[in-house]
Image 1 (cartoon, helix red, strand yellow):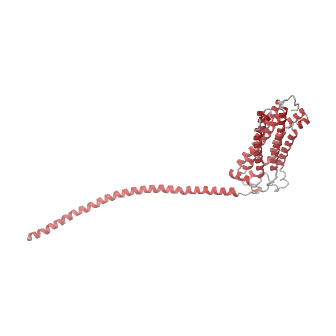
Image 2: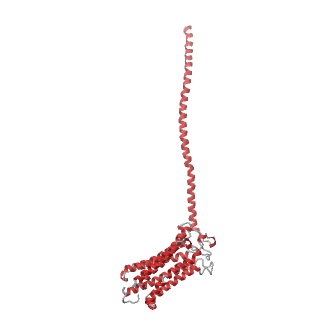
Image 3: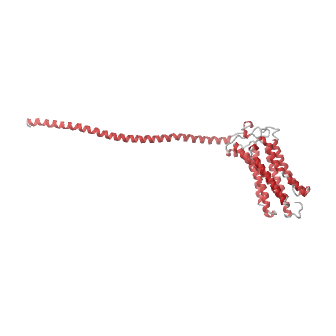
Amino acid sequence: MSPRDKEETPTSGSSTSHLSAAESPAHNGAVPQEEKRMNEESDGETEGEEQEEEEERGSDEGFMGMTPLLQAHHAMEKMEEFVHKMWEGRWRVIPHDVLPDWLKDNDFLLHGHRPPMPSFRACFKSIFRIHTETGNIWTHLLGCLFFLCLGLMYMFRPNMSFVAPVQEKVVIGVFFLGAILCLSFSWLFHTVYCHSEGVSKVFSKLDYSGIAFLIMGSFVPWLYYSFYCTPQSCFIYLMIVCVLGMAAIFVSQCDFFSTPQYRGVRAGVFVGLGLSGVVPTLHFVISEGLIKATTIGQIGWLFLMATLYITGACLYAARIPERFFPGKCDIWFHSHQLFHILVVAGAFVHFHGVSNLQEFRYTAGGGCADDGAL
């Protein structure tokens, strides 16, 4: 190699290195700008993703914030249901002095009262527990079932047993309807009246209306058979009884009527309604004579029915026997319970008397010229 070539060789090498050095800054400057642009794009995408994640997280947090509230509400409902069930099965009778005012009816019954029960299921389950209303409920519940079965049997009797099957079944059916309504409203009232003050007022009005229905229904068959041959008199007396009965129902719908202070008034209203039958009874006795009225007209059974009803009403109004034995008749044989028993007995006695009247009318053949008695 010539000396000249040796001199040129480093020069070309240095130029190459200089060129690389010249190009190197340009290359080194381009790369950071591209990376910066890419980093900015990636940062923008990251910010978008973070914003979406924040929104999703916010919605999740809102949902998760609601979930504990819903869970707490659901848990409280479950707890209330559990406590309610436990209370229904474990309630205990309480003394009279701790009852709320709307449950205080007879201050001579000192113990054995049901507490307020804001559940109809608990009220109906209490039928099978022992308390002050147990006898009141079962006397009229069983009486209702008895008259329901008796009425169905009577309605399905052969038509040949009646002179006028349709009319006679209707008039006696009215009596059965009145008895069933009275006894049904009564046992339902005594079952649920401890539910609440509002429920107590509603069912007490039904209970008093049922008494009026029984009295009115009892008049219908007796007047029909007793004044069989004088239908005008029968119609007039029926209208009077219906007007008086509707008046009694109207008065019984007043709130004051069910208060303990008006116990005597209640008894007086219904006794007065029943005693309105004295006028047609005297009419019948005067027109037919005492002997025929007693033997054929079944006045004796009518008087027995009236005696049972009036005796029951007097015991109820005077609160006998618990008045003389406070705390001794809390569960059994207090006045209201005896009143219930006498009502069922009086209704059955009335049915027996009416059945005898119907038998006589069938024997007489439905005529009025030959029997001379009715």
